[in-house]
Length: 195
Length: 417
Image (cartoon, rainbow over all chains, first blue to last red; front, side, top):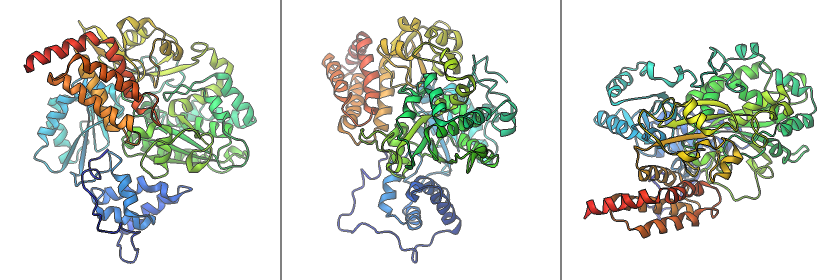
């Protein structure tokens, strides 16, 4: 799914890395605690791969080789097995990215209502700011507020190009992003559902 | 009739006190006072069909699980990713206890003690709400050891995904839950025999499980009176695209589709006509304006050559070229193909390339034949139905909008020349 792994050839001269040695692999205590807590939840601790990689991504900003090595060390698996997982999922970053994620849904329902234009507007406005990770994303499950974007996990919509400067400013200032556009504050469309 | 959406915007419904004040967890008490077999009988009597997409009878699915002390699992599929679908999101966000109650009852009927809710990573707000609800339920003794003084116990983990459509496919979900890439598995063995950690596994959608408390409250036979004979009950329909009031609507199955598209969602904007619509997410073959009087239920949609799927209606009006719709759909499945099976991996890629050829003015009418044959070679030839999910709508567009595609092709060819 992600380009990495397909486009970068493996170094065939090298033996694949084994399970990292805990004695020589420093892992931040807080991260180790989180990963171990996740591992304890499952009958098979390897099930914790996704939450563990997400936790490491929060610490390192992306699934860097160092992050993967730390997760592999705590989980007792090879880095390659985690690399395979990290390259599969869209929300795990395999390249360094900006700290604020802006996922713009460009799937069918949103594109029918102007998502491609919205994505272009956000990409352009945030082009010079390295704090932003602007991505065109597949259906985010919010076609009722199309066109929409998920900004650091907060669903916003319907958005227009006019909303973009305020959106970016809110994120930069650490404010609640476009409160009036947040999905969480929206009532159900069904007129008989009501309160 | 609102079962799932009953006063759903009541403030605080996502918290236990409000849910309990409205009679929440009474169905669980009622179920635990019954024998598990009797709960299963009610589920079977309701004839509830799975709301995730395949529409398989939920009671039957529960009954497939082997009895006895073998370690079994219940997994709730909250990886709602089918384009156009956003019903589970509203349920998770506003009434998470309804899902938890249904899940606990289902685990009792199926005799499972370990359960997981696999929620897509993008729904982080909803996952936080669910986590909080689960903590409340655990505190109140609805989840854990000796639930409400009975012998039944249940562990429940909310597992967050990380962005992959294929993890909504049940066996892809299981691999993902085991900490691997979400590649689908060969079936059989079906998950009911060999699923999570090789154990028998029951997998149900959020909406399906959320319906269970109402079935126990009303009784299966009473629930079965709603809707049509083979599509019982109510269904949440997500309407999106070119309509004036996009959103989730709870309907009784079997009402005319027109009532949903025009009556509830307000139809296309002023001066526009419905060109085509997807009745069950972007994987369903498209229908046209002439099909709007078909009743909206599982069998009628299948008879019309499409499917009810997840209950996501996407409306496209006459301002959008069908080629644009086809390209969006095909590109999505190309991106989401896990690459395990050749017909899907190559077929989605070549379909996109051929559609782009049309757009560049390089295509000839023969390309449509080739493209149709590529779709035929995908369907039924892969481990899962992701490839079919592209082949079915694209195939239907080639058949139903052939004239438009040929005209588009000719226009672009002249421009390019």
